[in-house]
Image (cartoon, rainbow, N blue to C red):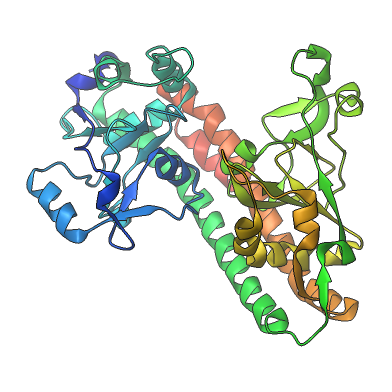
Length: 402
């Protein structure tokens, strides 16, 4: 059997969930996913504080057969549209928000490989098909009815299995790199805490070690302000990545855009810290970058301070959130950041930590670059695999050269 266009409703069940009310949330129990959690799992970020429902309530829902299971595919339907995540066994059990997430389940496995469908929907072809059924002008959304009609191009099952397995090799390598980096960060954070937590020293402030720098947004009415070669980062960009080292965001700005706004060019090694919507995304500038006004970044006075400040910000984020203000959303001001105090180590202590951490941060950067390359290859070849334009063996060669 050759390629065949079928609607999603012809190969699986398309549904959402039963409604959960806010009063049903509990402090701990079975995780409850919103669109945010689906998007984070899709990107590998997984740092949401999350919500929970009771095990009793989950078991009641389970009796109806309406809970997620292995190989189900979730699609975010409100807010961030079209994030795709295929459920793995280690994710279970959890439940999810009605209306915000569409669930594909009960697959016709004689005709379709669920992983292939997940890959198709994540591809440019699939994302365009999803975009074409969006509804709403101000607030975009997806409906179960419209997603059910989205066409999927299905080759014969063996080809689907081969594509799923081949792309799975790339995804697995990226996941391994992410796990290695996560372990390295945990190891370094443990070292940081042993050396600096409970330190008997005079209180200091961020300004003793770094300059606190805000950002800005060039006027979007001026097309000449965008499309240049100056990286411009937003909190939304930070929400989409697990990387420690940040090179660029979705948009670049021009020199004239930089000069005609409150955005500033900040150097490599700056610790980027989102100060609103939300507070607490942290990364390190891999090269000179600028940011929008949603940041209060720390430009170290000495490059050896970078690693110490990175973990210091991670440690102090809850405190910063507590002193932030705002009615619509919380924001920490420049003055607020400068008021935060902590036991100030000597420069020699900070430099000693730098010499311990530097090689591990270099390894993290190397792993991130490899994953970035693999992700580029994945996105480049997936449409060609779906269209039958290249051979599976191309992937093995690409991974070998990564």
